[in-house]
Image (cartoon, rainbow, N blue to C red; front, side):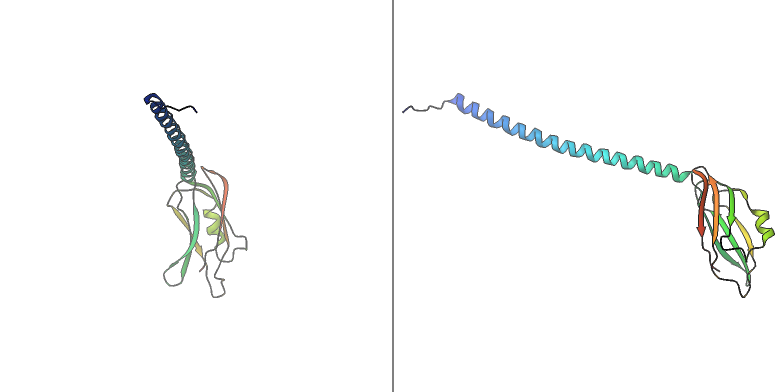
Length: 158
C-alpha cells in the first residue's frame, strides 16, 4: 500500500480551491442581488414615468361639474364650474331628460360658453316650483388641451 503524503503545498492548494469556490459563490449571489436591484430600479423608473405622464395629462384637463345652489329662501341656480387644471373651451350643456327647470333664454344666452377658466363658474336661473322633480340629468360637453368632445353627465339634486 502506498502512503499518501500531504505537504504544505497541498494544504495551500486545497485552501486556495476552497477560497476560490467561496468567492465564486459570493459573486453569483452578488450578481443575483444586483439583477434583482436592477429590475426593481427599472420598475420604479417605469412607475415614475407613468406618474409623470398622468400628471402631464391631468394638467391638460378641465374638470367640469354642476350643482344646484339655493339663494335666499326660494331662489335656485345651477352652478356649472371648472375645477380642473386647464381651461374648458366650447362648453355645451344638454338636458337628456328634457329641460323643465331652466329658462331657455338664460341657457341660450350663456351656452355654448366660449371659455370656462380654471376655478371659474357660470350660473343658470332655475325656475323651481312645487311639482319640480328633485333630481335632474345634465350632460356637459367641452374641449380642453387634453382633447375634444370631453363629456360628463351629472345628476344635481334640489
